[in-house]
Amino acid sequence: MIQIRFFASLRERLGLSSMNFEYSGEKTVNELMIELIDKGDRWLLLKEQDVLIAVNQTLCAKDANINDGDEIAFFPPVTGG
Amino acid sequence: MISVQTEDFDHCIEYKALRENADSDGAIVTFTGLVRDFNIDRSVSNIVVEHYPGMTEKSLMNICSDARKQWELGQVRIIHRVGTIEASQQIVFVGVTSKHRKDSFEAAHYIMDALKTKAPFWKQEATSKGMEWVASKASDEAAYKKW
Image 1 (cartoon, one colour):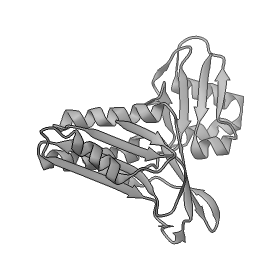
Image 2 (spheres, chains in turn brown, blue; image 1 turned 30 degrees about the vertical axis):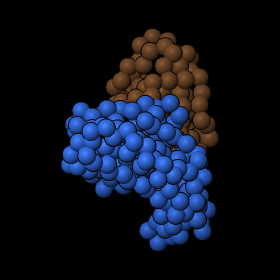
Image 3 (cartoon, rainbow over the protein chains, first blue to last red; image 1 turned 90 degrees about the vertical axis):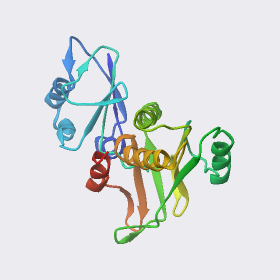
Image 4 (cartoon, rainbow over the protein chains, first blue to last red; image 1 turned 180 degrees about the vertical axis):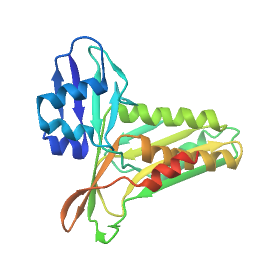
């Protein structure tokens, strides 16, 4: 099982802040995104160019590996400060 | 030291703490960011800051340690507020001490540029048209890349 979290405008547009996802085998974030998009068009927005990804609270690229128990987050570019 | 908090902060208290622990440092640089009451052509009455608890602190710690690798620093203090903040109120504080001024000036500048592009905070502004998410600026990314 992995936990997937969404923040800011992405959270609002999806109407979802977090979800648990049954997960088996080794996958990259990109493969996870493909699996989600297969489930429904609402997930297409994860593919938008400016979406940032964090695995276990560290920014990473789409080719990052995911392990069971990981926390994956998707969010728009940050705007603090 | 890093704080992510809803409460306001007192610049004088923060400066005093930096000064009291400055030891043999010869420079203190502080930066305070305020919430602007406008964005492009709209007036802003307040903002709501969302963040990613856990990752925010981790990201700010990483920014501090990156700064320490590049400059010789004494103390580094970062405060960032979250939740609802009224226009003209304080939102962010960065305080740095060092033996010589160049390190403090540059490190404080770097920390702000890194915070604006790497730390997971998102602002929503209350304008006459309702709540609007603030768009990231290419100029912020360009400022960070210069380091």
